[in-house]
Length: 246
Length: 280
Image (tube, rainbow over all chains, first blue to last red; front, side):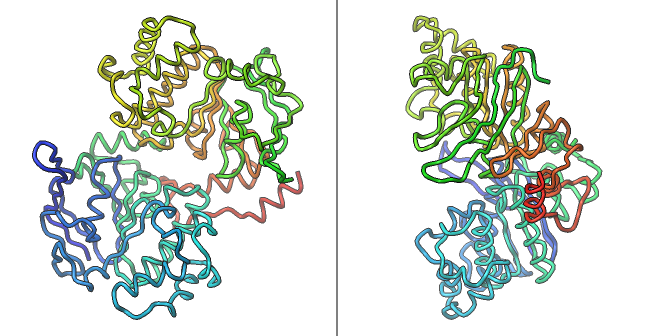
């Protein structure tokens, strides 16, 4: 579903130039959930933004659904992958009603006006259709993150890119949102790339985990590795211990 | 576990805001000796309000009532604003969540730590600077001379939090309230910050109140845990395994555990919790 070869991203010019992602390669099969775990500044979100088409100065090769994509995406390519951001307080327009938030991607991609799809989109993330007329501040954090997920699904993408989707939420609400994400994945055979610093969340959701440090992948863990607490690099061992799992 | 001379005695502490009849904190009682006590709960459970009520840092609209609220044997509620100012940062300290907001962005960090020494230790300017440098060394800041000249935006979050700890513990307070001291930090530095906090608090023979939503972290670090739900302490635990209340059990079950993978996580059964609340 996703093929990435020698992806490299740098920010800045001259002396200030910093190589944030240093030639990484990976692939994700259809229906698989890949996790990327690492500390702040390791480049994990940058990988995701390049996949989504938000950053346009990456180097290397990215293919989505078997076809290589360019730095400037066509509409069809953009619709393949949608992103859910960390902070639902920041990612939803505070002065737009929920119906407008949800209809906007449909209108932006010239797929109709989108209003007729709002009610079903809300119901599928477990919110009442009556929420369409509300403003974001009238919703709790967990409900807002559900709206953000509904918005990402409006264009019926095959890939969801999740950037710390639950780290702004309470553990009890986090459990509800993670359950919603796994139900949606089962229903629609979605492919996920989940980025987080929380190893427990990653281990719960993902079939395979890449450990990222300083712009490179230093370890790859399978579900069995996680269950047994097995690691292949010192850094992932440290991460494990720091998460109070060891 | 209560020591013969508890640092802090709290009996039936309640907080209401403005004209609301709802109690944000509803009759909380505990004694804190020279130990590590954790307070856990969801957002809105009242855990931070407890910390702020003890420090008397709540806005004027908050009404704080308690049968007993004694710090080192003296009642806090009858203290004047001036007396409280002398206590805060000196005998009792509060460490907040995000060093980016709790440090002054336009002053070098060294001056901020020295200011704490100047205010509370009544020493000369040069002596204050020396004490600050010594304290920053204690919290394992490398190259202290250079770091002291840096502004908060030039240092990392973990370093910022260690500067905060240095500033707060410089006057050797008897009571340290840490409100989510590690949740803005990366997992790999969390352990170091907690260890450091523990080391300094134990050295001063002080009491530590650790407020957090992360029940696993609190359980690993604290000797006793208070679990708060909607302003009530629903349970006091020494080990997570002893949890009886459905809320505590729900919180633990909602945490993903890589060792015991499940397909769906358990979510809180609010009805069962309400039912248990009525019975108590």
